[in-house]
Image (cartoon, rainbow, N blue to C red; front, side, top):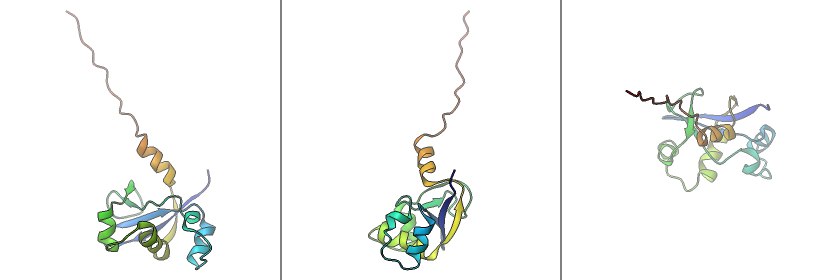
Length: 122
């Protein structure tokens, strides 16, 4: 399984992560190479935040617009405002799971084991 990387941004109220498709493309983009499209850098245009709000470990979910606005102020587009700021000011880190795996887990949560109900006769 290939290594998965993300850019982690420590905010004043919450922390955020964006998953990368290519570390090389990210480094080129971050150095100012305008020929590298953002779609080559990140795996999805989704910003994640820990369920607890802070930290790099534990369960994460997609950050709501409200949480993003509390940290980054009003914005027109996550793609043109929030994600570029996270990529410019955050730090590159190894991730334990990819964004694709997180989406798959969220759309197919583990089934709860249900104890069968038995009735007795008599």
